[in-house]
Image 1 (tube, rainbow, N blue to C red):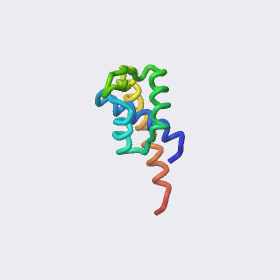
Image 2: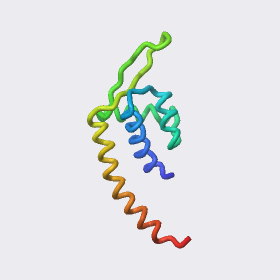
Image 3: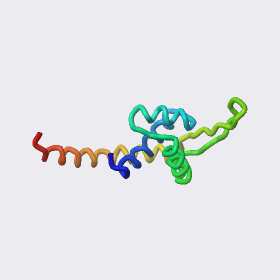
Image 4: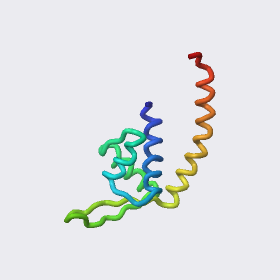
Length: 104
């Protein structure tokens, strides 16, 4: 998959995971990996970018003697998912156009 397409999809997949409820890094990786490959080194820059963009917020909670960062989606994050759903309609038209031009 093209890296730029994957980048945009990963952002929305992370937001969709958080729309289901507050979560932390390892759990987000586990959840998102069910649909698209993601590593720890990929996830944390995404989380930072989404936080900087106001699409999620973080809190730190003590867990087994360590601080664990939890991530929660914001209203702007929910709006980004809704925007993506609208964009997807346009992408589907492009896919159908491309797919219709191929003789298999």
